[in-house]
Every structure is written in C-alpha cells, then in structure tokens.
Length: 345
Image (cartoon, rainbow, N blue to C red):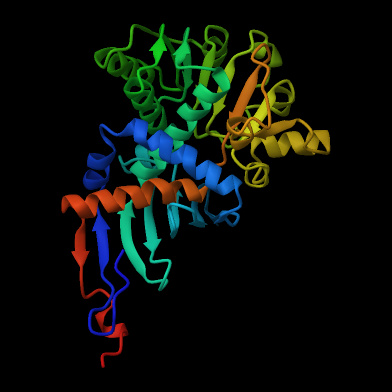
C-alpha cells in the first residue's frame, strides 16, 4: 500500500470479482494457511475485531447489511471493513444472488482507504477455508466416508472447491435443499468435477444419518433441525449458517467456535443454547485452542463447529488478494481519488 504525500496523493485500487477470483483459483491450499495464521494472530491478541453491526429494515425483516470492521496485526498489518448485504429474496424477485459485499482496506499508517475489493468471493473463500481447516483439525485428516450438505448454494460450492483442491478423499455426497432441483444440479456439478457419487436426500435428516461430515450452509433465520438422535453416530458438523440447530442439538455436542464472544449473539443457535442453559459451559473452546493443543476433542462424540465469521479473516484473504492483484496488474488504480482532499505545497 502506498502512503502518499501532498505532491503524490494516496491512490485507491479497485479489484473486481473476476480479478479476485483469478488470484484465489489454484491457490486454495494457501488460503487455508492464511486463515490458520489469521486465527493464531487473533488468538495471540494482536488484532482488534469489534462486534459486527447489523443494519436491518423494518419493511424487509429477512434482509440485513452487516459491517465487520477489523485490524489484524503481526505479519498482516491490515485494517479495513467488510460491508456485506444479505437479501434472501434477491434470487426470486430480481434474479441475482442473495449476498453482495465490498471490502475496504485502509493504509494502517495514514488511515486512507487504499483498496476496494469485490468481496462476496473473498467472504465465501474465507468461510470455506475456515470450514475445511476446521474439518481437518477436528476430524483428524482429509477423509470423509460421506459428506452431507444442507443448502446447496454459493457457500456449499466454495466448500466443495476447497475439498476438491485440497485432495480430500470422500466416498460420496448426500445433498438436501428445499429445492430438490437445485440439489440435483449441484450434485451433477460435483460429479463433473471428480466426486464419486451423490444422492439427493428426501429430508434433512437423511443428510445427517448417512454422513460422518455434515455441512450446513442455509439461509435459515431460526432452528429447523431439532432431534439430537441425528447425532448418535458422532458426526462432525460444520454449522456455517449458525442458526440451523436447536439448543437441544447444540447441548448434545462438543461445540467449537472461532470466537465465543462473537458467536454467542444475534440469536445464533449457540446464543439460544446459552439462554436455555443459562451459561456457556457447553462451549468446548475455539478452533485456535485446538490448533494450539489447549483443547482436545473426543471424536467418539458429535462435534459442531460454529464460526461467526471474523472480520480479521476477510483482512487476511483480502490483503493477500490485493497484493497479488496489484502485482499482476489486474487492479484498477485511481491515482487522483483523494487529490482534492490533500493540500499541495
């Protein structure tokens, strides 16, 4: 990032979705390592990650825009803000995706915005990288007898790309979506890209009972999976959408988060479990705790990973993408963006 002077004002770099995707494709193993290092930097205390802000709309209660400001120190030295919108009716009413986002990166020395990146891909990438890192760390390797996927949209596709590129050994997939045609289309994509087989589940329970690794990527606003018996075979559940599981399901599991203070709020399943339990003793620890050996998990019991999604992860991936895009010449530099605000000599 360029600090700039009065004679040469700070510039702003714009990085499009295509330019972001070009840097991530073929480098997913590196993205997982970025997320791992970001978690450890955050755990060491060298970060500032305020609570996310939720902008809601009285006439559209399902929609929201979330702000995630953060600073990540250590090797990253990055500051910025992710501004991500979730409008679940978009696909039906406008024919466009539910989520959209931008990431602003600020120069940590001057505070000036240095880059604006399209961030739906960055957000999906860091979410999927976090999920696959957790799956390997908590599950003990890169194998799964069968993977259940509940909700076959954008995030599910990104999780699959990470599993594929990190060469996971997977026997097959059981897919459930409220739209069976969407689940089948996703399954056909999987097999076209190397998956062994897939089944479209008749109900969400099938995606649990057939699988040892379950990935929840829905847009649910409240719990819709209630029966703790679905966990009797001790699956590893990546609860990426945060609000699918009832308190009873949560309390029957070992619960790992990315940051407990962030994950236990805004009526997530963990938050509802806290209210039901009147405490947080059901939370085993964070993923960093497991990575650092401070916490062990018992793989003979069900494990649920519920990551709130920290802004520091967006900074880690976003600043890496920005540097690569600048080096590749694919970022559009606006050299005079701040020219009139800087007093010349």
